[in-house]
Length: 213
Image (cartoon, rainbow, N blue to C red; front, top):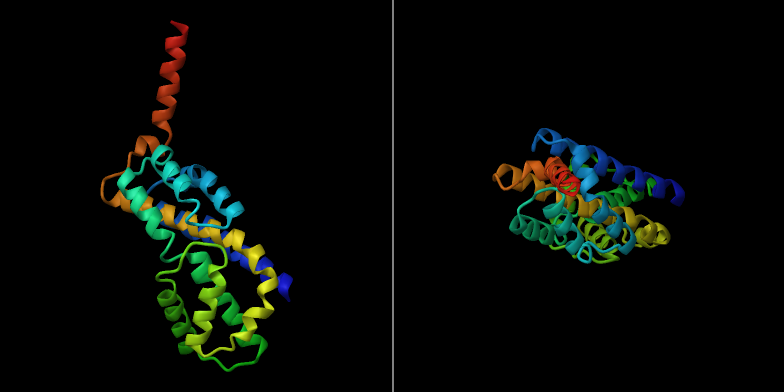
């Protein structure tokens, strides 16, 4: 059962990373999501290995400004805010996944209204979540307590929590970066030539031409 939860958690994070985030970039910002994913990959790798959203902020800001053309003020503010607010991996996917698992394992009768309320609670709990390792356990505990679910179930799933935390942190960082791109785009503070890589290509072409001369 734990292996199944582990695989499902990674699958859900992948859907969030490559599906939900890409759709927002494509249809809200009206930009190519491939460039976004390519530009933010270094930050996602650091987040995956360090398991710390806060520790990844410098890399996230660098990638947003240098590779994705986001205004520096927007990048700094949104990346910092995203490391302590929202966090789709640690405060969204994981606590709700544990809650649904516990409800089914224990045979608790849950109505559609209660499931909807569970989602609302997850959104409320996500406010003020700190981007450090182990945050998801604290968030899940708060969600379980608010929803009246047995907190002891979180302990049973703790052996795989750290393994999932890598994917959760990467999902959090990419989500914050996506928000920064959306804000910059809607506010006219996005350099699309940098985002699309055309400016870098022009600079490389100019350097090559000067070297030939």
